[in-house]
Image (cartoon, rainbow, N blue to C red; front, side):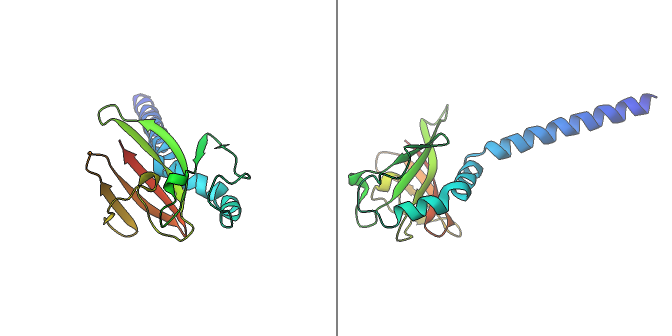
Length: 151
């Protein structure tokens, strides 16, 4: 009888630990962005691919809690459309993450700021500016990139 209680307790602890780990994985920034691109990417790409510079009228401003941004200041040589999920980091200032659509499939810095992207693995780049802001960008699929920025 004592062994059955220990076994039940061990199974219960393992189940709770697995549930917590799955919850952390499911809510991890990169996982949230991957699901967003999987759900909305093809539809958004159809809207964005032929648009002239400016905010396309067909893109909702808020897609499932994700904020769409496009700025004339971000045009540069390689325009982009950014979809941001905002969060805060307690010790490291403000953290931003999300994804962007790059029509010409060129990786860019946060909000299309001119920074040097340093390769950091396959299809992944990091950047740092003169004021200490830094971040990374990573290719999700053709023309879609994940980003993180600490400002």
